[in-house]
Length: 65
Image 1 (cartoon, one colour):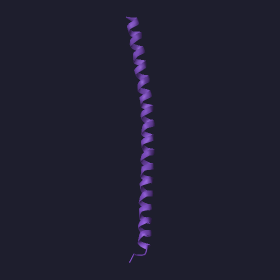
Image 2 (cartoon, rainbow, N blue to C red):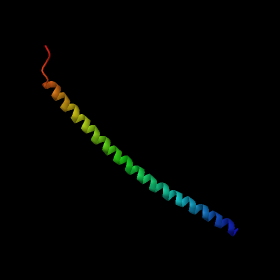
Image 3 (cartoon, helix red, strand yellow):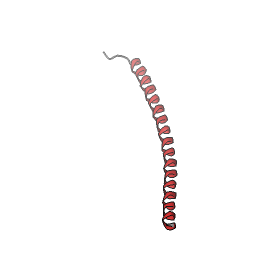
């Protein structure tokens, strides 16, 4: 009986360690997602600004006859 309890305790410790590892990994992934979303927003703003500037430059081009 004691050996069974020891084996069960060992398995519970493994599960707890796995849960802690997965929680830490999940936190890292959440941070990576947040950083990627922030970068995507910045890039989208940069592209929008570039499009606006390009439209202004095209408007300044002389029309062809």
